Length: 312
Image (cartoon, helix red, strand yellow):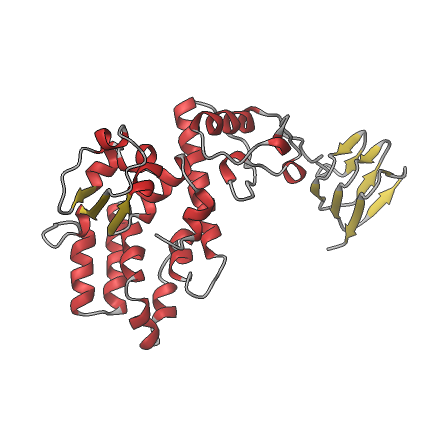
């Protein structure tokens, strides 16, 4: 996974665990000293990792290893994913063997169809096809195969060789899955999504875009992932009240405020009347879609606010 932009951005913590053990799933892993300890708690000593992987040439107790001296530079451990081993009876191994024997678009299409009917986790199909990208490109069949996939995450994986930003789609998917997992665990309903940005997405958020802020946000130090902090932030996001855009579908705007730095669309199928006290806060951008607009009273427009009127 050296050189992976996904691992570089997710670093260590719950998002890394979600990606590594639910989607990334490398076939072979080689980790030495510092890197073993770096990911001990989030990956290598977890029950799920133990269920997915077996050591090659060693039988280390990873819980014990992770509690030992973390300066042990000489440690070197190899793992192989059980589903990919030659004697495995997994759907992934069978599919890989068949493509190695005969690589055809029809076989890939069949596997996708069968997996979807069975309602299984089908991410193994994209991982397997990824191994044959060179052959598919050489035979001019890559685009045909690419079009068979519906999952944006799978498509991002497959087009990574030509799209330097494809990994961002996968990161978004990891964030969304973690977000919904938190919903289930905390029994809290999330009503909106917040864009995470920056080199450490699980502890940074963009207040200018989501209109929310958190005290000390700009002073957070880059000190690594922390599940307690992640849980706190995501819970705060889900429970926060989010400024909404006024509704103008009834044909009249009056006594309403468009939020600061907001991006609002106001859609009306008939004539829209602008009444008293319609305010656009600083930085607000409002697009009005209506056949006709009658302005009875002027907008109150603060600094950097913009009104765009579009007639269908």
